[in-house]
Length: 361
Image 1 (tube, rainbow, N blue to C red):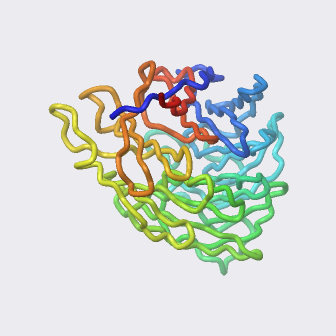
Image 2: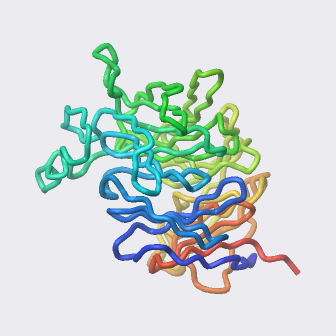
Image 3: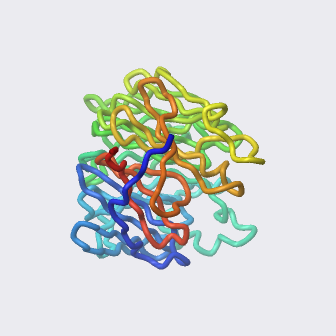
């Protein structure tokens, strides 16, 4: 069975594809923003108004991650040595410095210039690990995964990775807890409740713990969802989490309140393979389009055998409902666009394509 998708919008990427990362669509409170990072700047496009703003970047794009406030007026760069909030002029609003993410570096840096020249083949900062940051749904909090200690902690604080909750207005640390992880990278999953957040941490061959945090009365409590899990999305109500295992064998529906697995769907045998295709597996990205429906892809395993495929999955029983059919070729995985929609990025990375299910009949 197939279910047709309808193209809602084609949004041109704000930067040249050859000099920037692929564009990303952020959505909060019914507003969509297209974000694209280059080495020297971050471009932010509001598709509704056509407004384009550019944030000067404090360091190159391979040295960390970036996120943008729901209002679009602040960009937060999570780098090797600091989490820094900047406005469109490039002025620093606030900064939280922390231990360097480069494995062998013992320094507490004050600026990127201190290690800018240590990035050659034998440099300690050539292939560093990294953390990440994300704004809460209301934009009032900034959650950040960093390597500790923080600047000013003192000698009694042991080196660890920390999950911080910051006041997004001034960078004050409101709460923090050690994660007990050894990350090579991480990313956040944002639920509708500003007091909650998801964090997926990649540890290379050591594992992939997924954490769920809750801020209550200034206390950050953290629950481990699983040791070998990657969070994919949160349902519109915030009650359910969608995840996959690190082998990408199955999709898992978790209860957000306690992390319990409610249902799962194995790619094999649910997804029919292409002729000559080996193991079929889920992509590392997927999207809730409503409380009971998910769009997930197998584009990674399909590559080389046929067009990448996207599937409609019902969460009531975690069963495959239909293959998504598109009016034009698409590539890559699906990502949430909010408001019942999802998006893909064009193969040449010059556009964001926003989709929704076409009306049946």
